[in-house]
Image (cartoon, rainbow over all chains, first blue to last red; front, side):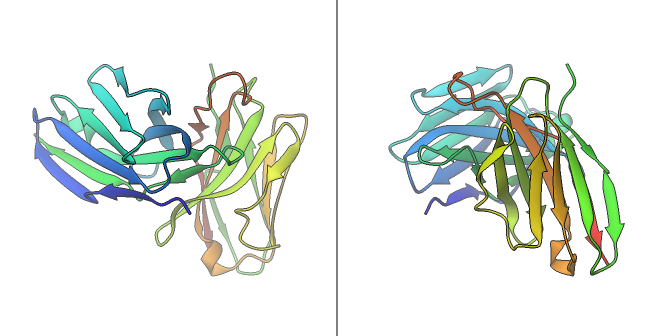
Length: 113
Length: 116
C-alpha cells in the first residue's frame, strides 16, 4: 500500500530564504507526482507535475526534483516571499490505479516579513 | 478559460438529511474525481469518472455515498442520511483523458459540509 509522507509538518522562514519541502513515498511504481499549494479555506492550486521519467521540473522560482528509485521528491522555492505562506501538498498517481491521487498530509509554510 | 467550479461553497445540514454537491469540470476534461478533506484523515480519494462511467469507486466510505455524471460534464455527489463524521470539505478535480499524455488534475474550490 502506497504511503506518502511530508516532513516537516510545519516550517517558518524569514523572507528571502530558500524553502526546501520534502515528500517521500513507499511504492516507486508511480506514473507521476504533483505538487499543490493550498491557501486557508481554498481549493488546491497545481504547482508542478513531474512524470516518472523526469528528474525535475521548473516554473519560475519553483523547482521540483524526483528520485523515483529512492521514493523522494523535493520542492524548492527560491527567495521566499510572504505570499508563499500556504500549505504545500504532494500527491502521487500509481501506475496500477485509474487516476486517483494519493496525498501527503502537507507542510504548512509561514514566511515572515 | 474557466476552472473547475463547485456548488454550494458551504452547506450546513442536520444529521439524517440528504445533501447533493455539484461539480462543473473544465470544458473538455473527460476525467473527473471527487476527494474529501477532513482534519483527521487528510485528503482522501472518493470516486473517479471517465466520461459518464465510474471505473473506480473504491474510496466511497459507505453505501450512503453515491455519485453520477451526466453528459460527460456535470457531476453530483449525493450523501444520504448524513452523519456528523461526514463533515468535511468535498473537492472535485478534472483532467484530460488518460492517453493524451497529461494527468495533471485541476481542483475546484470545494464545498464545506457541516452536519449538525
